[in-house]
Amino acid sequence: MKLFRKIAVWLLIALYLLVSMGFVSKRKNNILVEEVEIVVLDSVKNQFVNEKEIEQLLHKDELHVFGFPEAEVNTKQLESLLSKEPGIRRAEVYTGINGRITVEIDQRDPIVRIINDRGYSYYLDEEGYIMPLSSNYTSHLLVANGAIEEEIEPRNNQKIACSVDKEKIEKAVLCNIYRLSSYIYHDSFWRSQIEQIYITDKQHIELIPRVGAHQIILGDIEDYEIKLRNLKAFYRQGLNNIGWNKYNKINLEFENQIICTKR
Image (cartoon, rainbow, N blue to C red; front, side, top):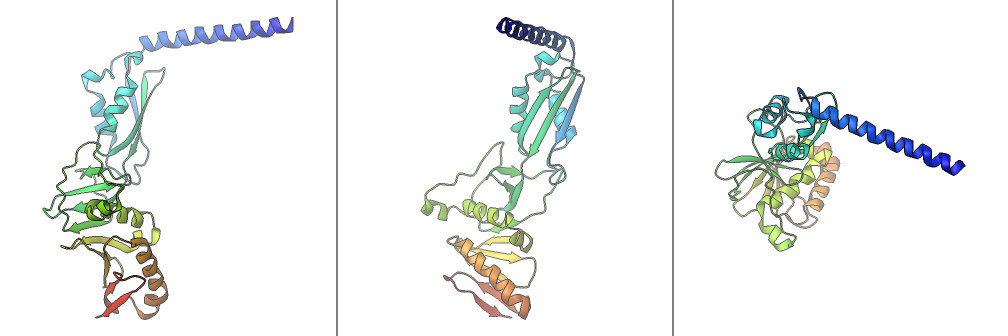
């Protein structure tokens, strides 16, 4: 008897859910989309995307959004379209039951601005994707310039191709810049200290700090983490005591050595 009651209860619950789903589906077919709520999740940090631009994209007739039944809105198509925008890392679209659609936007986060040897400029983001500059917003961050010869023309969802082969990576200047920029970006000390990466004609790396009137000669990309770790210790134990403007150059090219040239 108890088993029969349990089965009856579960059947009633299933029937209720089916009726409710049918009601919601019918309502979605009748209610037209009149409003879109756009949420840019990280707008305080970056402003490459704004609500007005997103809404203009959604007004395209072929997308069947405004003035169309909720049931006809293809959320996956909208997410795919929005994710192709150069400043957008991820887009999620939700439909409701009251004629409102919610769009959540996660922007790309650039870590360095590249200025190549032809004067062409673009960003690299945290994941190695290339971002064109925006007419709406300029991100103030690390700059890399000098002998950067790669001919890059930013387009949607383009990522720099860094080989896993160490020898090939050493020769790829953009990959070297990306690796070094990522390290600087995720280290609070270096992020506040380094403002420029300069690539010499020999593809060696020089760094320009925000504090101090010296130039940092990093050399090639090999062991850059160790070189910067040693330099951080020298900054804290040496320059803090003798002054940040005493030297003209600080050379890290040689293994476990810091060679300073006085002014």
